Image 1 (cartoon, rainbow, N blue to C red):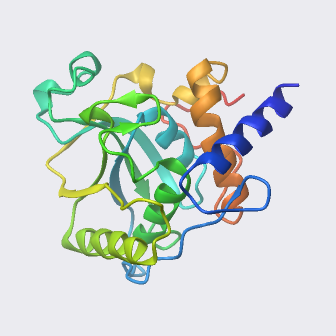
Image 2: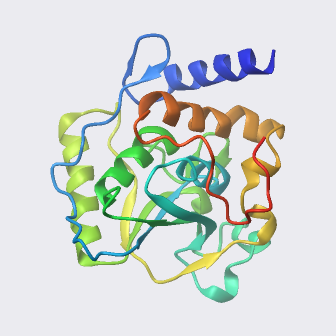
Length: 233
């Protein structure tokens, strides 16, 4: 019964989202970026910092993406002294709930991370909100750490807007990363620890389902956890 409810909720959210859809609730992947970063053989790992609503769901999506080494929930956009959940939740700190994605650029590019982000992890047309969550702390924002990331992010947003793949213009901002501050431990691996939480079940599990259905070649079943002692259900 739970699997049936899971599938029904995922289908409903996918059909009603602003992402173009094909078939019965199956999201159409956004176009691949025409401008992307090129990895070198000795690239090592890189990081991407993205904000797209509540960090629980965004973290959960990228914990299932091939080429990702670690994903942390946290805060970006404001000062370190204000990087506490209770303060960020007031919407007055300048912070957005964000995730830091540590990835292998030889397995997945920065542009492909943005493609997955905009397709299944967030609705980039919403302003200072994401579904039931409202406030500047839930805004969409790409925090670039290098000129190359800035170039790729701006070019991709322009590409998607010009192609009119969404009903409304993309509202996600592109700003320099001033710092990323990890969230409290109990906010890490939140979906794994609380799969029956009504919020998780309604809004975040369907995002992981959308990743699996839309990017099967990128999906890995076992999530990469911040705390390996946590157990996926």
